[in-house]
Image (cartoon, rainbow, N blue to C red; front, side, top):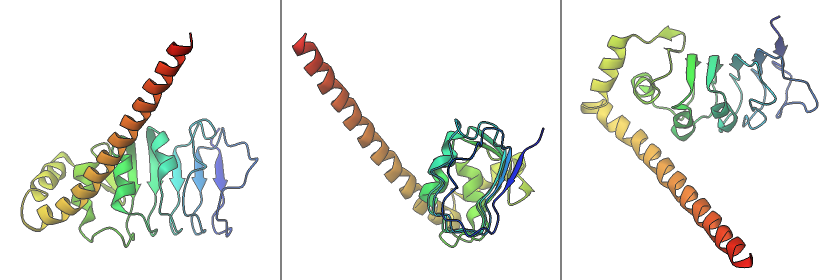
Length: 184
């Protein structure tokens, strides 16, 4: 049984609490005032396949990264930056719709193709292996190289912060282990 949940144009700024979402396969949240998707997680939305969050005010995609595979992800016409797009580099997305995000450059398609290898279509247009090869070439020369370098700096910054967070976590855990072993 296909379960569709429609919250389009309801004027919501967060997802309504207390709803059983475990069987929702398609969630329509377009034309609202959402700024983040923190309410999304694989425990609550176990069957989620299609997510339409177009025409909101999204700046964060944190909740989406917990879904390893999505059939459709529509985040078009929001305020999403490259730092958020890059968080999806391990996700498999069959159709990724991102047009109309003013924070992304006009030439975003080849950069997205190059950085998100598990996306099959962008804005409804299939990505061929030839286009993947052309995108890899485009980001290595001329104008494409300049644009990619800007995006790559954002990615490098994310990696540095992630590594610092991991080092701090490891340090905290090792200090906790030392404290535990001194007590016993």
